Image 1 (cartoon, rainbow, N blue to C red):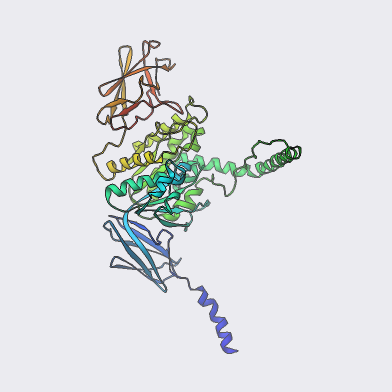
Image 2 (cartoon, rainbow, N blue to C red):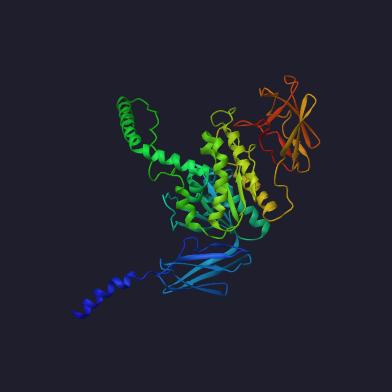
Length: 499
């Protein structure tokens, strides 16, 4: 009996001992960032001694009072040779097939989440997807009201069996870079369809920046209205179900859509909710930079996007604590949205472009490769390639053309306006004749379609209807027909000269 009592007394102590753990990104097939310190972290018992060994070097630390520990590996050279990361405390963890290269953090909404399996030439791309040095860590979707410590996910090596579920934009970017740079490329894919930028803002944005504080206030009002909205929804849903049942009983078709549930607690629209649940747990994983494809959901409020986007970039960089990490994004493509000639997408694109004033930024212009009737264009190969061109030029200092013509200034030239550009990329080129989507106006700002001709590295724009021109717009609508490129085949970004 005495031994049984002793066993029962000791059992809680034995089960209370916590195994050493690693943060989820440190798992089999991981890619570690080259050429900078690499934080490695996890949990253990408070005051437990931890040893971390990688490539013959060992670091030691002690878990703090909360059971958290972290070490920083010295900068590592790129290597595709599989290695083991070993963490030892009261138990030992061995992480296998770890390589060293460049890690790019991919985020945004559905066009970043869009998988290879749904894109152009999906079957052929999947069958050819044998690139063992390209890997993806797909972060599990999670909304949290407070910064979470742990995310779910696992690393997958690109192969015909796995690549179909990779982010298509990220995969084609990584495939291009890996082959060019001869290094492993890892993708951390934290994306979710149908999400507002507000959901991806960090606590720093929501607390310290005017745009973020406005988003937080708006969400608080949504939460306050939720009980009333929930009641109204219940009544609306019940009426909808009744009409559906009545139609079924009569054998009549019923095409009315189910009512949309109101946003409320735990919703993906939670201000900061996706940053807290899907980004914060991965901080401070060492990365080369960020790739971003988002904005579609924000087009109804396009004019506020500039402040939100600039805030997101600045505060994400602060959160990761690795300086001005490169931040490259996809400018929204041509899509009808509320109508091909409406302009909310043009305004959103301009808001995206405003972030080019921040250091180490770049945008892939895509107004020529969208699908007017489909918000999810399938040609993600070219999107990935254009992002890779930006990275090659700006991050890796390669001598490549990475941008289409960039509007610099306009000047009056008689009865015409002469437009000046940077990055002519071997010269300006009209892909469509006559050139389309140029508009011109006088001081009254009444814009009319205009004739446009290339003259050296400038474009001359005029209309007989506007003898005294003052302002010009190019591709300033939801679904423009891109006509101005450089000889590198890259399109000019939309612009307007009127304030």
